[in-house]
Length: 450
Image (cartoon, rainbow, N blue to C red; front, side, top):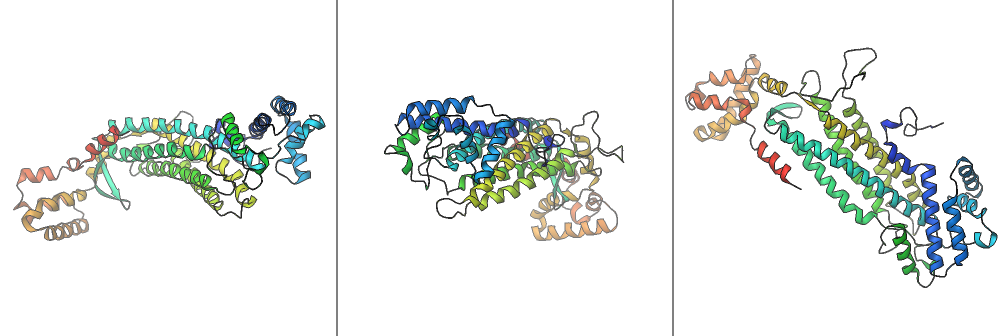
């Protein structure tokens, strides 16, 4: 039975998409490893490193093997008996060949040649899925940004109302960030999509006089590029992958946390979509919790920790260090699964997000006009100087709060202001929704950006 939450039949969907998790399971991984071994044998035969009949037999056997429970158990026994990561699979294949052919299985290659190549192949598939979900996120954000471009709400700093903004402006900030991440996924592909075929210490000495040509042919056959140099001890790309997943889940966490806060009963400006049958609490029947927003935070935190583990692999002893790259066997799949699920959930959250523009306006009005202090100060500055205007508004705000008054009432009753600003100018200044600055224009700029 599964012992981890990711593999749980009950809770697994909280932590990973089925399609992403399936890329990393025993069956898919073993099938991919066997295909790499098959291609290696075929390419080695083309360069006369192993007999062509042996290569044909190896490739045929690797591709025809049934990856069932019995075969996986055979691999486990072989691995435990040998203490070697790949020996269980090698012996299982060899046992199904003639002795003459069996000796050529996996000839001249190392564990990392297969596992690193597989990792890059599987991460390409995972990356493409994440990119598709990011496109869904992008589209949902673009709709929200345009729809609420001019919808005023309170901009908050340090948890307090600051100045008016629009909800579309808030979403445009998310959208610009997501588009930067999408560009990062494009850029990282050229560094990730390369094979590993390096031999014992990276010199390709076991692959014959035409080793570089053989490497190129192998890369072409598996569908990856050729690295400039062997990278058995250079793990920066995996560290970069972890960092990218940290960035994109960090954005998802920020958005989820914003929804979490704006859905508070006391604020109530946005809400996660509700589906019939959803239960917020088994003790408080009325509860409607921001479940996705919360869970995005959990997924992001775990991803950050796993990214740190991948950064540990940057420090490597000499030409190979199992302490470093075997960490990737756990950290890369788990970080990828968690991040992919986070982006999928973010797309769902945004597609169903409920926005309460009336409540946003009510919260603005309920603020007592204190967020107008900047606009009034700037209007007074040409008359009495900025510092004097700041001091006047500062004192008015303190007195108004102390006496339970709104800043609007305090301003209207202050001769030092009414003597300088006529009634129409003051009325315009005291309209909270008219002070959103360039929010709408910046929304337009983001929507027009690639």
